[in-house]
Length: 386
Image (cartoon, rainbow, N blue to C red; front, side):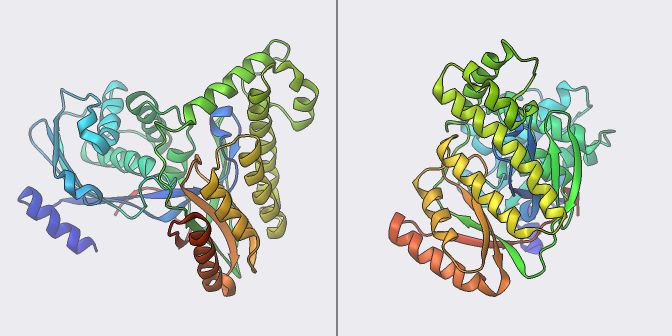
């Protein structure tokens, strides 16, 4: 595959690429919509992601091309005009990262030519945007010899998504993509950025991603609305409680104080954020102790909360998860990512995988009318120069 990309780069730009980089996608095992609420998440990097072939230029021009959007051709912009332009579509993600690096004081004095190729389905909720942001970050670090560590690159990539793209997302996606570790998930406290790795030991099981093929665009989904509802709930609680985020509350404390939240919908949103945070901490403990069945049960519980209290699932995700729960060899299943379409994550016994994919695909198509895609994924390391 890389050889084909090298040839494509040469055909496009007229010379050979000098270096290649890779950033994975991510899947979140449990802990959804907790990151921007100051709670815990439990994601891992996966072996699918974004490849980038690059050559530095002597002038101030950037030329970017994506195999995934070949109909758009090469998109160009200049170092002194780093603004979000609608017509530049996907290029606004790497462009935003360049801008954030410069604003943070890092010296970038020329452009580069780059060819991107991603094998994460776009709009699937497996973090294709964070993957392209982080791969751009490691390109910048390498080409311009920048003294910057991965956590700082993660923060600047998130800032690009928040301020340049306009999606109020938390830090989980970029953190998992940048800090991933093979065969480990990351328990991340999004309030403090304290993190620890937890081995995901699957002896007779595998992780299976189910793509509903219901596309979802984060920026124009109800993502920002959910975030605002949680902020309103927090404000109500702060009238009597000394807290900075919903993630600071235990389930018991929330149950005592929930009546402070005047709006019933906001109360449901806060309930999900707080219960899900505690569920995530418990799930990591169960996994460390080898209690995979209990981990699976908590995954199922997480989906129910996202469906009923947070209301971010939708007919496609619910249908796929409910079909999955009825299959033989399934340990647990839930939606993963922001919701409103995208993917599910399931833990499935190895010897049941083929039947699982066949059955769920068939029944899902009958009920929803869409063809589902399935990927058995390995847990991989974070972004790196190849």
